[in-house]
Image 1: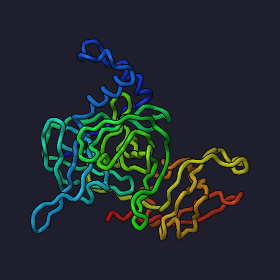
Image 2: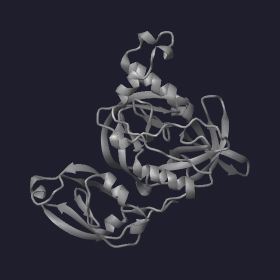
Image 3: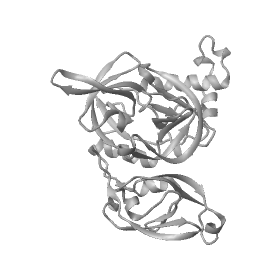
Image 4: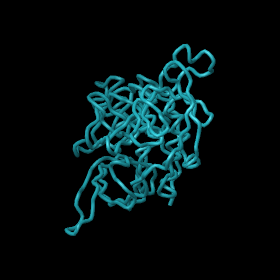
Length: 342
């Protein structure tokens, strides 16, 4: 009833995959492919069996009716798939997962974590082909990535691009019910409705991200697969939920101005791009443009640092925050709330 998840360093995946095929693996016409095309083709070949097209169903008086669609990625052979929380909704929801081999399997939602926008579903099958997990912390800006999903219901669609930026935290969804997605991967690989929950892979075919949103033309976002999110996935598989603390800010890394660096060892902080109305950050007086230097005594250099701190032990506990505002340090106190999973 459980799955073992293991991270594999992604390093320079593109070159590794390009060198991987040998003459025995070549098919007619392969000689016409350049190295880039070989890499993308090999990633698609390796990952396609693990990616499913999801139809989310809701029971009504007239029976089950479809209420949403997206993609999912098998992460264990015994039926567990990883997808986006906003695709499948709450624990207990159900639907159908269609695979490349023609199988269509019923699934149920095991658990979802809105803060990371990750969810685990489980099918009735025990013989899935799982994706190999990579480590997004090893990604570099400019590195090749490949997206596989089911945009507009077109199953097994493959697009490729590069990592455009790392370490962002951006709001998504309607403003009244905004969700803050921490530490996202930004890519220019084309993403469209239906890609959410699908695979973002490095050049060696390892899963390094879960596609989550389209923020604009040429601006796709993916949740990274790293030590933090792998722990979240493990909790969802084991217990169906993750208790998370919530601040209510969106932000990204920014170099500190020279005056702020003068007496500090750190060179970067998190710039506040947006503060969710009524959130703990809003009540504490945090403003757009503030640079978050420390939280609870620990330096904050990236959105990933904040994400790692937002665990259950901080819920309801007043903690100090040090920010840089208008050319000077300012100390605030805020009390993280428990993330509402409804």
